[in-house]
Amino acid sequence: MVEKSENPRRRIIKAIGAGTITATFSGCSSMINSASRYQRPYSRNAWAVPRISADNVIREVVGHRPFRPAGFVVRSEKLGEKVIVHNYGHGGSGLSLSWGSSALAVRETAGLESRDVAVIGSGVMGLTSARLLQDAGWNVTIYTRDLSRHSTSNVAAGEWGPYSAHDPKVSSDKFKSQLSFAARISHHAFTNLGGAAYGVRWVEMHWPTNSLEEKLSPFDGRFPEFYPHEQLLGPDEHPFPTKYLRTTVTMLIEPATFLRRLTQDVYQAGGSFIIRNFSDKREILEIPEPVIFNCTGLGARALFDDQELVPAKGQLVFMPPDPGVDYLTVGGGEGNLYMFSRSDVLLLGGTYKLGDWSAHPDPEETARIVSEHQRLFSAVAAKLGS
Ligand SMILES: Cc1cc2nc3c(=O)[nH]c(=O)nc-3n(C[C@H](O)[C@H](O)[C@H](O)COP(=O)(O)OP(=O)(O)OC[C@H]3O[C@@H](n4cnc5c(N)ncnc54)[C@H](O)[C@@H]3O)c2cc1C
Image 1 (cartoon, rainbow, N blue to C red):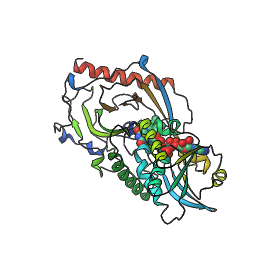
Image 2: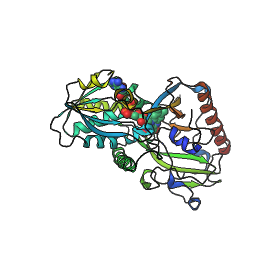
Image 3: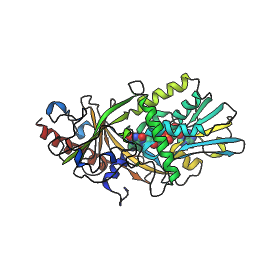
Image 4: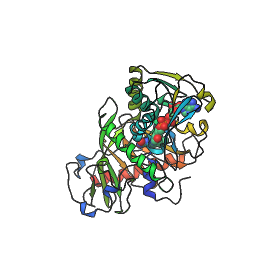
């Protein structure tokens, strides 16, 4: 079910759920050898190599990215006496865009007199909307079918990258500006949250590749600050079994830590949670709050009859964490591949299957993800002589 006509490199980017390395790298052979303090020496001591094996798999997980070709929805509407503010459909980059998209959503409340608001959903959009509303003086009640640890947001791999948020061939210029705005606000907000408390840190990301072509940034390189210190290393400058290594630093957001901390923050600011599964819009309109934020992710398809919203199934494979591995990789083999060394797990991805609602892990995908990473890192170990 992977979209067939798609270029394989872009597919990897989408499969992360967000994306990664970008245009700022591309086609810049002149950058080869331009050392910066982030360039890791090509030596055995500088690279810890993850130990990948099928025997080490502790879990396989599946999540469904809420994808809309036209892009995510942030708008308000009046339904009877209620004001509904929509904030859903962020595809593979909801974690990354959360603060920015929620800031846009909260802006929709300008001029409203009431101070009581209901937020439906406690994934990353519900929680960041709730926090921003509280900061703006609203009394927040979150109604949700699942607490955040059971949401798609908790399945996110966690790289900060505003990718696979839309299909650029379908989305409007207005949406593209909205995306840039949300990305900038969100990037700024996350840089303020660095550290263990929110599970946000900067980390090197490496992309083994044989090609110097392709522009991958959804922003045509307009925001180089999103991926600073980019390098394009030549054949003798890195230990990967490819001609080049594109390398940068990015933010890694550990979803479980981030969502748990946001939940605590909502409580601390006086918010409350009500577990409730709404079966339709009519039930939502019966809750007492006059202003209602719709942060239901893929749930908005049924609740608000948005047929444009489709799942993009993603599958991840977890291994025990390896604190020695202090970098991420993207690509380097067949199909969508990425290795994120998080503090809770060593995560291997992934898949991106548009329109696939199945909730079970596919054993063939698990085998591919594991064996391709095993092949990649065995080659790295061999080149390092370890
Ligand atoms: C494999 C994978 C990897 C990903 N990697 C990244 C990444 O690296 N970076 C990144 O930025 N993004 C990534 N994403 C994307 C990200 O996870 C989503 O964009 C994001 O989680 C969407 O958040 P949300 O709050 O809108 O939806 P959700 O997290 O799905 O939350 C929706 C909430 O609404 C509630 N709800 C739904 N229906 C109802 C109902 N009928 N009644 C009551 N409550 C309801 C749910 O219970 C839930 O609490 C990834 C996704 C996947 C699947």
